[in-house]
Image (cartoon, rainbow, N blue to C red):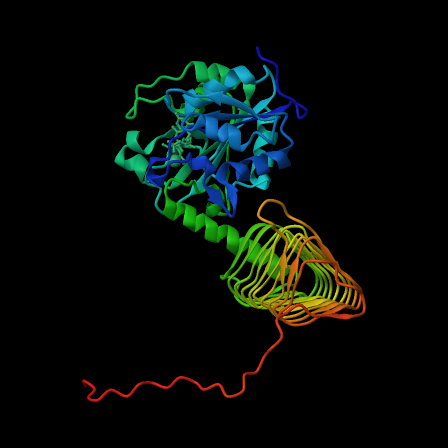
Length: 469
Ligand code: UD1
Ligand code: CA
């Protein structure tokens, strides 16, 4: 007899991800397709993380190298190659050498991204108590799914695949999600007994249910409340559907936490969006990576924010692209502003339309309101960067820094050729190109003087004798 699993027995997870996903019509493996900015498999592994599994084995096949590379940053993961792919039971068999002798094994699917830890925890507990736990779902149209067969007393007897089912069995709506959890010693034994004499000529994992029944092992079916939690992705329509599900859930969480969304259906969160109190987000905004919006932040329509921190009371006007930037409190950004990585704006900074800031810091109350490029610059407080000012940070080979000290003003259309320092309180006249340090507290102008020519006449058009119509 094998050891009876105890509540403390280790949990191992096998994630099936060998399938090609033909219907996606893609060159990349299905489980790497992004959902809310993260690969499908990443969603599943995130859930596994919540279960604190002892060991996780991903069964790969199609695009195995790509899948492994995409998750190389998770060194605790193990991979088992399934080649050729002879069915779901065969897939789990490939993972067995990576698994310990004892404990329980949870089987998940790399293309069923939204299964929740809450629905898996009771299954794991049942398996630890010695049962085979199944996750089932009531579907209005279960075409293609395995059907749950129950005996007269209601006990689960087995699973029949759609292709193998009789018309009576096909009328059953209780369907197999594919997710199950079982004590490992028994699962090993059942997998060894699988045969492929069925409609698809495959080794079906689902056949372990009848084998468990034959062994007198209790089979416990858990039915999920929310169908979306167990939907698989086989084509782009299903992927698009799940994308909306994820986005709707993200929008609901934001609304519940006190954020105002102009339209919960027109918001995309592809990462983590953290909001303070009384944040307002207008339509069409995309949030990627880690975004923090402090109390009272307003984000105008059609902004894209990626890895950004925004201080309290700051207003982001429409159509901004903000990437890798920190913005202080009570700042005004945009419309049409672009902030690039390692930009840090202090409180009260104004960045106006068609202004790009890269790898620069701007001190308290500094302004660049129109049509400027500020790159690799350290800008002090209360600086006014005039319309069209360009920080020429690149000499064609190397990038150089520019320092603009407190209270300096750069005139419209000035070009600051780095490296240089503009001293505190300096003023640069409009249209100046400066390539040397600009002294503090003085006006520096570097432009051709205007000349006025007396007696000059504007050319006039010659009159033709007869002009054609
Ligand atoms: C499977 C179940 C079915 C269930 C359905 C839910 C079996 C025999 N059938 O059917 O009862 O209703 O899922 O979606 O298990 N995979 C491999 N290697 C293989 C075959 C599949 O890794 O050799 C992976 C696929 O990548 C996929 C998952 O297993 O992630 C399911 O495979 P799929 O072919 O979609 O199974 P179904 O026939 O839909
Ligand atoms: Ca499937």
